[in-house]
Amino acid sequence: MVAARGQRALGRTVTGPGVEMRAVLCFAGAEWCLVARPLSIDGVVIFWPKALVRALARQGPLGPDQRGALAARIADAFPPCTAPPDPNAPDTLRPRSPHWRA
Image (tube, rainbow, N blue to C red; front, side, top):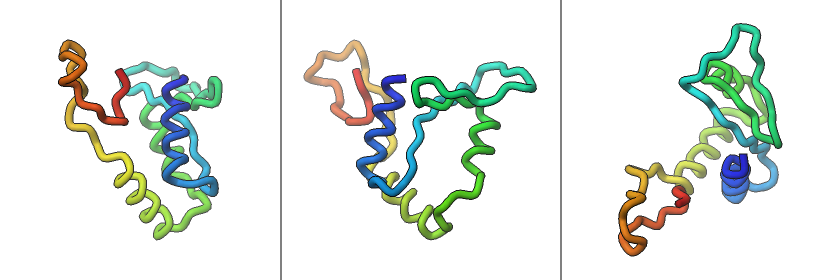
């Protein structure tokens, strides 16, 4: 939960204070009963894939152009990592990406 809240804080540095940012965990391989609802623990919302897709598809306060611009800002600020760091590598050889925490 602490890591998810930390990621939310990093996201807020890019989006600014006017955009609502939620911390989310999505468990892709978990089995959920048919009447399950997403739950929140310590400010982190826990979803399964279909429930997360429904939540993300809901209409929000931003229009399509605003969402596109925001998505581009986030993508520029947080480029994808190509591979996780090797935990067996000496400290001097480990990549120092802000997106991976050892």
